[in-house]
Image (cartoon, rainbow, N blue to C red; front, side, top):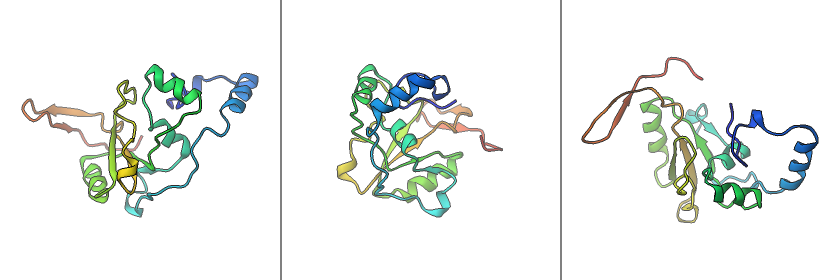
Length: 157
């Protein structure tokens, strides 16, 4: 299932037919242009997405104010790339590559406090959203440091 970028729920459960055509007409032109300030390196190609819909979905949470803002056409903060690490080494590789580039962590995406919004774009040459959804196999959490260790992924989702 794909989380909807413009409202609650999943894309697969969204409106269809004439309702969809009317909604499309209303939101036409709301998406940011596809010009990116950051392009992922070839070695991270399997982790990176520059799809406009993906970027928009990672630029805001799901608080009521976010949904209303998007429906009013205010898509203010959008990351240049969405990176989805599959392992601890992927996270290390992404963070090594991102030296100087803002990295905004993205968990479940609900963020009702604005934590996933890349508002720091003007202070950095680019912004990436680090989607941690593939790192969902926690096997241990250190009580002192709160560091988590996960089971490696053996196959891609």
